[in-house]
Length: 399
Picture 1 (spheres, rainbow, N blue to C red):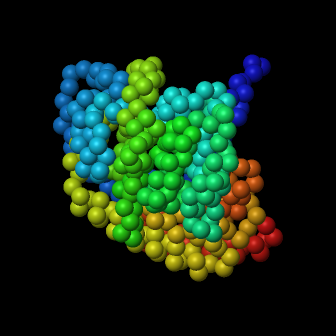
Picture 2: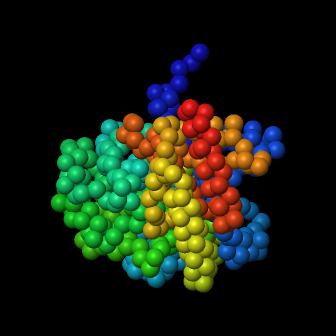
Picture 3: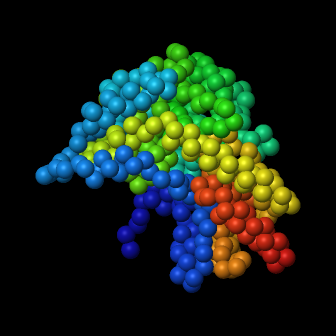
């Protein structure tokens, strides 16, 4: 039998999706599965995005430019200027989702075996992108006891070595919901300038900041022209996960030209999805005001109800729509699978994302899960009740 690549064998399974076969089996047997495992919002996509596709009449579905449609990039530049980020269309490259953007950036800044420092827990697919590109992730742990705040800069400095090429953060954070402060961003900015590193920020949840807090982009920080690289996406902002449109934003011309070569190799991002994404930029502020108010209510309900369950520790998110939960069990992977295979409450169960896959350090997060509060309050309340009963049963059964 032919041998598979070591890279392919090392590719981690997604903690968000690896339990899908068990969920599908449960559904086929008539069980209601409440999905808390994936950040697929139930908020409606802005109508202007869908209408733009319906009204886009063409005779030939052609390639777009490798860097993305010029009209879309120009309109994106206007959007960024409105949120305090002064960039031009030539400093934006459209990608097939934020995932491709991250892969391109890793390929641009690091060679095989080079290192990127990432505060953990982090978006699980960073591990996958790093494996695919040959990058070594150097994790630096943050803790649930302080809501996963940025670790001390001295800790970062101690991890910087001759093969370090970049620091990567997600702001607001997936899976933690942590929103980095202006002071934290500035401390990282000073660090990457001192050591001549790239600072990469995954800012796809920019609009989702709560309790009166405001997102501060690394591209708003002075003195990072050659260092700052932002990855963005329409998926969460406009509830358009299926569009698969993201982008890279950087003022570093050499990096942008390098990223363009990777973009040319994959030809072009999808045409119809760019049409929808360009139209989505006309979404009025009232849309986001309503969305933020809705997610704030959901967050408050979820955190309040979870904290009533004995033994649970919950980090309170200030952004995105995830929270990290520490459970009074040993093995969240086993518990999540057991929920789908063996536990039912009034014909329903819940699907969770075990958190070990959001860490790079072995042994961390084994009793934690990530919960996405992207469902209406009634379903969230029902899901927490199921979780409460399931934990009681699980421990009674001796797990």
